[in-house]
Length: 158
Length: 358
Image (cartoon, rainbow over all chains, first blue to last red; front, side, top):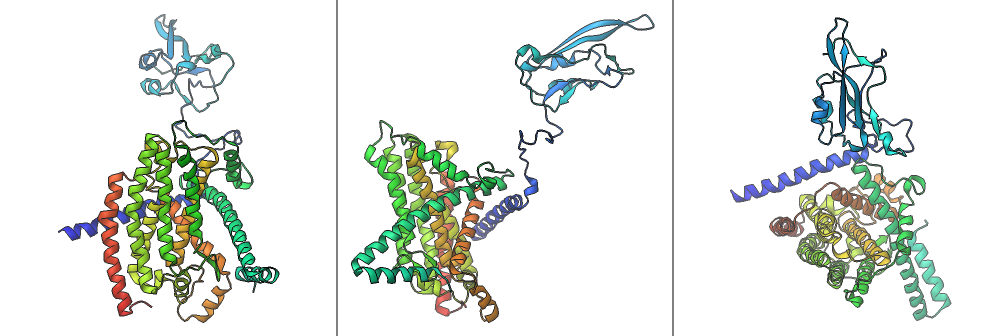
């Protein structure tokens, strides 16, 4: 029936508009919801969201060991050639040759923080750091080697 | 007790004692003019900072917070910036109309201040057809918008101006009809009579549901008439850069901007006068004690409080709802608001004849 639909339309519209106004009214009265960070002022206490993507880093533990096996999955996943994995062959105690990384070169100046390398990594060796103040005076400083000198692969990571 | 009407009376008496009546009237006119311009400047500053703060909190932001305490002087700094900017006139523009348009927008807004009752016995011009005057003069502002859009020689400006014309012609109807429902109940177009009739309760309470419906329709229609979001098709940033004031800069742009905010103030003032009792304090029937306490609050505070509440509601609309498309806009008016307000006015008339209101 036409009139019934018409009135239902009006009531539905008013109801949905009121729902929207309740939401913004809630935000207006609850100032603790404000997400603005007054950045240069609160630089010391700045808290970034957990999923913030600053740059790719490789976590090392206290014995200077990382989890990277040198499988080059990250290099293959990267859409713009940001990561170069340079591999070498270690000799294990049993006398076998084992593939390991020599250097994992990361070009920050090429990186778009797309997170594809982290998703591609089978052994969770790399992750996104939360720093974002990347500016340097010389662009050669943007090319970074992610594994620390003298580090080796963690036991049990294949 | 100290009140605004005492001040005006003493000024009037002093002037009449010092000069002959003609000169006294002329001096009063000059004083009123200066007061209106001053009110405009102050309102512009307050409403802009209010809009920015309200929008910021509704969008989970902080808003301006650098200039002055909590950013309260931001709009003053912006005004200074606009004053120092160059008022550019494009080569292809119709220069006379282009420069005239912001002035007309301003004059239309100024004329509307005349019949508004700011406080008890404090009114520039208590004209006996006040409501008619308001609804007639408020449509002059569309001429300035059309003029600006046409004279700019810019397709965005012209489109914005044409949309604004279609919009104001449509929404004037339902705004007029919802205002009419109050006029039917009061039986007078004079604003002081309308305020006086709400002594024992505001019309929105006295008039049952039909008055609430016409109040809502009035709010929607005036939001559209002042070209504010969700009806800001005339200047839709995402479609028409800035609509009719794309080509304006500096002080000419500031005049348009100011006229928009003063128009918002005026329509909210009219809404407060018609539906929320103007300067009349909140009176509930025969509760004499309660009514007496309410009378202690000055009438100007009642008026400005109600007006700013309505302004806040309109800002709330702006920062909550998405913009309508032009066909949706006209659908809303011609298919929904107009039939509902016509039916509503029948109900109100029936109510007035049978005396069903309080």
